[in-house]
Figure 1 (spheres, rainbow, N blue to C red):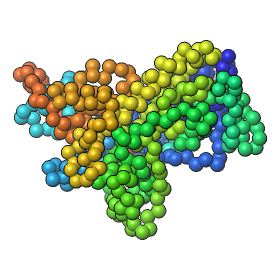
Figure 2: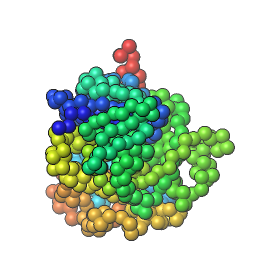
Figure 3: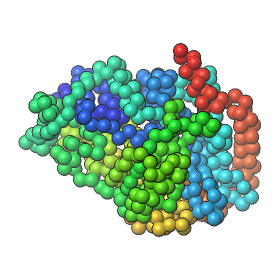
Figure 4: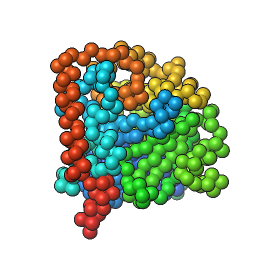
Length: 503
């Protein structure tokens, strides 16, 4: 029987796992212990989320006000992609939004109308959210219920403070035990399963089941169990990141979205918190030197390149061949890494931890039954998420560097992505193209990226009735936007009012 579970490693991944397992196992006699080293710093670049996180936090019983007040959190209503298209064709600082609102006004699919002749709207104008973002407005009213808003949203937050919030909740609400220890060795039993870990102090810590959240070190899944790593470096070319926290621009206010600004060999993320901006310069070292990266990053930040103090991260893009091996499941950076273009890190960790909690075995024979389906689902989610990230690059019409030209090749991409793109040249994406519940990004996400980047789908047939209804629904956006401007506060004003109310 499985009676004792160890989560090795803290941070966002470890404490998400602790809450998921604590919630699922709270009515059992299974004991969950998180073992955290004080000697291992958190990578902490995952500061953006998608709306899925709201369901998770509500399930955990975490108060939204606590998140907003204790994690320097701001609202995220989507991503603004700047210069992902050719500047000579589409203009300097061309941009499109991937908002979190559905692209189906009043649940009606207006895609055929948007792509038909005579429609001059940008695709992200199917919702008012991109304009609300440009205006800097919050997605919630002051009177909105927790986790509810006028528009859909997620969060930006300080990853270290978020981990502390999760830790407090897991310990207080789900009685997860917390042990400070630095693991030095791993002991395997005769079957090759993890039997125990040994700390630098010589303590032997034995458990029945292990969750590896040790980050890039991957102490269990890699070092001890030797589970192979599936590289996606041929498909996603960026392999380096320079990271720096910078002050907020008081003249700009807090923008309620993530900025993703493309450059000749990658892109820059820009995430506003209430206390600072988290920024990162992602690039492919094959196409840009570190010196050039420093200069371009400094230029973006308005700083002196010679005095630019940054944290450097080597990005090994890919994931473990299996996430559950023997009596060990890996999560977070131990499981894999994809560049944080669509807030993939926390999403995949949250998804996998939730799936594990829902399929947690009572004994080894249960584990043998559950493991294969679990691994198939997780691998599918990683593969399709990789496809979605690749989509942003391969359909770009940028011609200004070898990086962008090479990215337009699908030679190393999955057959699924090739098939989907070929299909979407004939007609727009439909829900049935994303048949699995493990497609974490579906046709709604694809619609925004494909047509934000002017993907050449054949002109669809749009019936007179469909044309008329689409125009009527989209015409309501003008009224809805007027109401939003009247009722919604600026994001920083909304957050300031919350702080004052909490005093």
